[in-house]
Length: 244
Image (cartoon, rainbow, N blue to C red; front, side, top):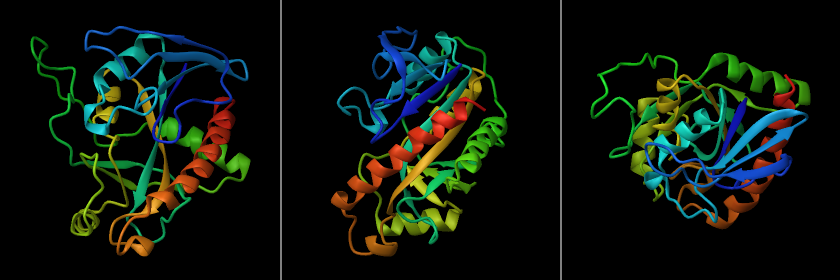
């Protein structure tokens, strides 16, 4: 079963038929909100708004462990994470859809593992943080649609909720990052720990600080329309992916 985690700009999934909310308690507390169960083209799908109803939970306060556990508890096997990002690489401007293949984690203080307290110490292989078969399903759906997506990219996960300084973006670029967001970790690692296939679709909504038209400042107003259009494309892409 497919699970979709919607980030900024995707607080509900418009094409989800027969949708009904389900509150799922977990050993790690409450997830961001009710999980919405429904179907797309006859296939069962579960949707979760990462930032909660009304977009009230900032990135560093999201209960990532509860979110992933709740999806697994409902029978989800594959998770597509949708999030908005800033473009660091020159060719990744507003409107680009990126299917990343690597992550660098700059966050701190987040509940980032299920293996603590009385659990035995366990080390997962995280060489390739995204599921290649699930990435390929997304890429195949994009090709079938004629939707332009960027295959691969390094996602830098920062703490938030503030945006980065220009100097910080310069540092991320030196580290090899192509895009920057605030929710990629520990979500990806938690999915790996509990055996969920996990991939991401990232919508570039602005040039990162100090880059392109964000050289002097980032325009929040300009991001809004790019975000809306980008998420509309993502919904169509996921609808197509479900049938593959």
